[in-house]
Amino acid sequence: MEKKKLVMGVIGADVHAVGNNILYHAFTDAGFDVVNLGVMVSQEEYIAAAIETNADAIVVSSLYGHGELDCKGFREKCDEAGLDGILLYVGGNIVVGKQPFEDVERRFHRMGFDRVFGPGTAPETTIDALKEDLYKE
Amino acid sequence: MKPVLLVDFGSTYTKATAVDLEAGGLLGTAASFTTVETDINEGLSNACAILKEKTGVNDYTATYACSSAAGGLKMAAIGLVPELTVQAAKEASLGAGAKIMKTYAFKLTKSDVREIDRLRPDILLLTGGTDGGNSETILANAKKLTALEADIPIVIAGNRCCADDCEEILEGRQIYVCENVMPSLGKLNILPAQKIIRELFLKKIVQGKGLTKAMELMTDIIMPTPSAILEAMQLLANGTGSTSGIGELLGVDLGGATTDVYSIATGSPTNMKTVYKGLEEPYAKRTVEGDIGMRYSMRGVVEAVGSERLASMAGLTAERLEEMLSYLEAHKDAVPRDEEFLRLDDALASAAVETAAIRHAGTIELAYTPMGETYVQSGKDLRNVKNIVVTGGALIHSKNVEKIARYAGMDGAHPESLRPENAGIWVDKKYLLAAMGLLGKNYPETALEIMKREIIYYGDQK
Image (cartoon, rainbow over all chains, first blue to last red; front, top):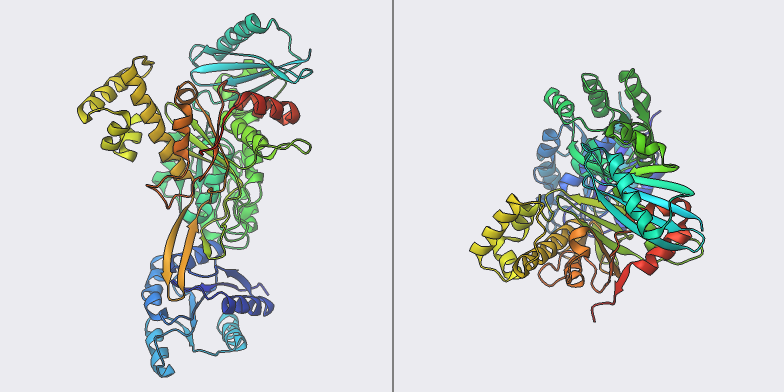
């Protein structure tokens, strides 16, 4: 089976590199072909990378609380760039303060993210979800 | 004595340099006016005659040449995303000494293909997709290119998984497949494509440029002149296995129509708090500013720095500056001798060097994050580069060449531009770089020795 390709990184002005590196290793070990864009990644960078590598999913991380602002319009830009229907995940500490996760999830779903993960999610959870979404059929 | 002849066929001058391999020294240099129309071989024999008068040598054990005649090596590059494979294709072409006529991103249209037919580049570079990445675009572009009327050699250096398919689609054309210019995201791999481009230049392109007869006289190597200069810059910076070079450098070649900038430096971030953005940079990088030059591209220089600043640099009023620029535009071949024009030429040269170096060097900006200040760097950080090397007729003949060359370095007005902070200036007074690049291919020790002896050093800023 051909490896599925992920583009990942930490969005916005966020420089939290450690969790991102852990995820990179976890995804790679799980058998994905991973393009790690590192920290301070703009929406445009994820999109350019996904086009050039023909990625199957974009996995966005955010820890510093400003993820909601950083992620606005991401799905629309993907559509505009020809990445219609690309799998879009977001996870981490993605909103300001402590908010009920169901609300957060709903808001990010509405923004076009296929899956939303809250703080403290284990890499395995995301890997299982990726496998389910990418290898279904 | 073991004399070697090195020839640089330019669009206006043919330059000949003689070197004695046994003594390891320069014998002499000569230049002769030529155009392709008047036959390039005439320029060669004239230059050789002048050289013979100077040196007394007529028989050479070997002869090598580079050429930028008839517009040099003209290329068009096709990629997918502008800041990724298109940029990689551009780096590959420029590093091979080409002039880029046009780049194309995403899928080609019919009118793009008609435009390529009109532009008639010497070589087309077709890229797109990382290995195993996007294949749709490069395949679509290959299909579009079957409509080309001109028989242009096409170098395919894209996603390796569809190289065979591209080759099949373009069957019957001159096709050269090589490794991907960007095999994985952000990784640059331009040397294989450059090797093929240089071979094509040697095998196919020089023939069409009236150089066939001249080539018969040459023992070996015909490469595009910028490629020879890049070779020389690398040799000068890195040295050979046994002799050290001068270290990392920034080089500027100021011409009448274009300005070429070279850097031989890694340029990686120097600080842990700096985040690097964008495509990897080549260690030996060349950029060309088509709108920056001393005569044909004079207006580009004015546009870049503003006429007010240029006037004040030259100590002229705005009206007088305009008058003088109009005069020079009407008399492009004039070599002004009076003091006022020399001042203007120095100001134009300074502004051109500054603009071209700013465009070549990377930039850094401060970003405020909730975790504190972070720096974001794109392009090369050349602040720790200790050598600025300048060449080009307009520069090397100016009395104020050192002062002009300093404009390639860091200045207070552009703190975001990562140019050398404290560099010594090297001036290629005898215009030897291209010749030494050619010589260095086979005799690196002699070429390095001559460069270190003949290129004049002006200490650092302090």
